[in-house]
Image: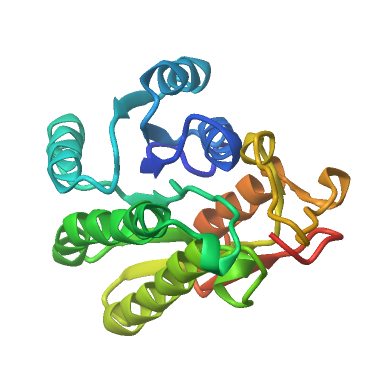
Length: 238
């Protein structure tokens, strides 16, 4: 039996990597999916593959988020049952060589985006007395890794945001889960040019996107007390 049959899921960053693997895993469990990512072409391909509905745009854009949630409400008549904040960017640079624009962009996508989406969905979930928010973090939200000034700042911020959310929604019927993987073998690594003195983890030591996807499925189908899942590959960085 499909464990998520009819569950309405809004998934960001769905066009590749963890997001695309998660879309496939959720579709296999019967979820009704609205998929979000910036690249319309890749997103539409992912939606066709899993039978979901696509809404292309930038989660850091407040107007887009408002329009997206309005679209979701029109489609489902309500806010989603599940919001999965997976969209993110990742780049490496030594602290003193990190462009301010890159730092701001990491905060916008990795932190502001989840904040905007949670803020848009949470009131409806609270009124309904049910819902689940899954925030996809990183080991870089817990450890300061060389070259990760912008990324770690954004993910540490997301972990703080998540912990405040967990404290505020306790006992409301709305749940939130933190997913914390170490480095995951996705296309994000393909074009990375690491700064001097920073060695990238080996791809064969990384987690697979499908492993993270299955952890997310477990968060939605497992015990209600599942509040945090940490995944570690054979490498400890990334």
